[in-house]
Image 1 (spheres, rainbow, N blue to C red):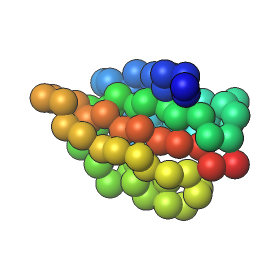
Image 2 (image 1 turned 180 degrees about the vertical axis):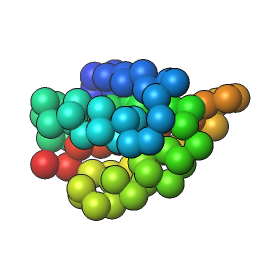
Image 3 (image 1 turned 90 degrees about the vertical axis):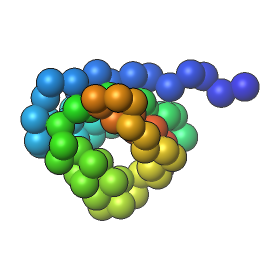
Image 4 (image 1 turned 30 degrees about the vertical axis):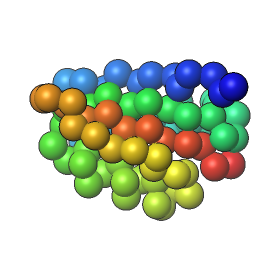
Length: 77
């Protein structure tokens, strides 16, 4: 059974802070770990998937949760 994902609360932070904080948190996590990112910056809808494709991490899901988004990112390496 996998561990529940770590959560990064980036609510209230504007671009590029949600992605920068996600990058920093992922660096300290083992490969295969999942990071749950909460963000309400409208640019995060574009920035988070772009960050994942550029860095090689897998975007497992992206959902709207009424006023903010929830992203699940799996660390690849």
